[in-house]
Image (cartoon, rainbow, N blue to C red; front, top):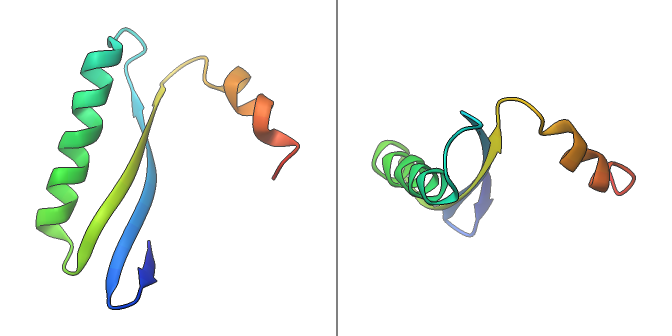
Amino acid sequence: MRWVGHSLRAELAVTVDATLTVDQAHRLAHDVEHRLLHQVQRLTAATVHTEPATGAEAAHETLAHHR
């Protein structure tokens, strides 16, 4: 989380079952954001990245040299 002015923004990754559809993972990400907005005072937005519980490493390797 980071402060932007007088409000908080969050970025997080959520590990999900690899068998979820894109639609299910998308809905889950929005559910996580919604719950956070209700639970964390002054939070105005959260970017929620979903990734499969297995097999995500290959996609992460694509960006590894940028970090």
